Image (cartoon, rainbow, N blue to C red; front, side, top):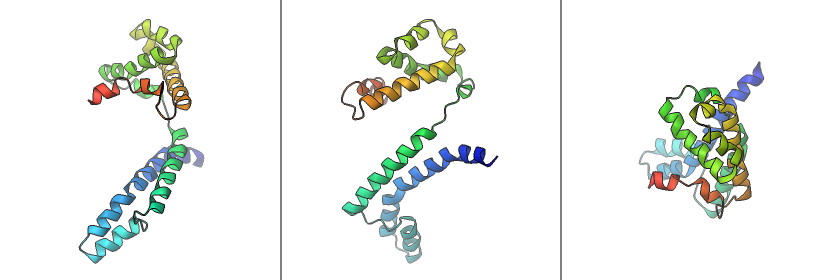
Length: 160
C-alpha cells in the first residue's frame, strides 16, 4: 500500500525540511568562512544562495511558519508506545496531564484523582483529552499573553 509508506514517512520528511530550513543561515556562514573554493561551492549550493538580507529573513520566517503549519497535523500519537516506557518516565509525562486537568479540564483532573491504575488503564482517553486541552489553550492564546503561560508552568522551573 503506497499510501501507508507516504503516511509513515510524512512526519520524517516534514521534520527533515524543518531542520534543513533552520540550517540555511548556518550553511551560509560556513560558506562565507570557508578557505577552500570547493567547500564554498558545496556550502553555497546547500545554503540555497542565502545572504541574510531582510528579504531572505522574511522568506525564512514565512517558510518556517508554513512548515510548522504543515507539520503540526502530522504529529502522530499512539498511546501503545507509552506502555513501553519505564514507569518513572510515564509518571513524569503524566504530570503534564494533571496540569492540563487543573488548567482546563475538570473531567481529566477527576480521572487523575482516581489514581495511577485509572490513568494508565485508559491512556488513549488521557492522551486525547490532554492534547485537546493543549490545542484549545494554544488556539485561544496564540501569543502566550494569558492562559497559555500556564502551560509553561513547571517548564520554567524545570529548565531554570
